[in-house]
Length: 104
Image 1 (cartoon, rainbow, N blue to C red):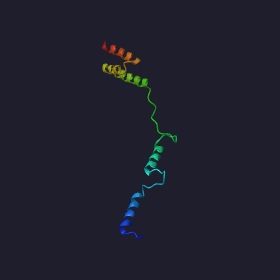
Image 2: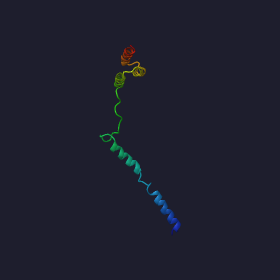
Image 3: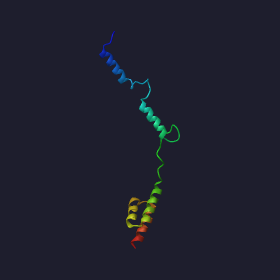
Image 4: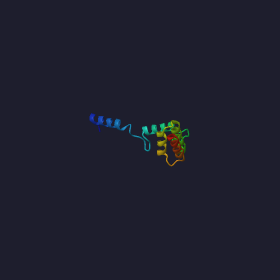
């Protein structure tokens, strides 16, 4: 059977359009493979492990730093803000003592 010019063109167009998307069974698209390769380059030094978040800071260290910042500033507002944020922390008592000292 002989194909006409329209049929041959149609088959050719379908082959071109379908060609890049056709993969052997089980193969991933090209972009997925590249994304996985990029993840390995950006990840941790150990192969096969995903990148992880850094360890969280110790909350008491952050509170101590904030108290030191208020103490360095030395204003009533700084100590009041510290007490409002950390009223149950032991350093809040020191901040209250500093407030009393400032009010004299």
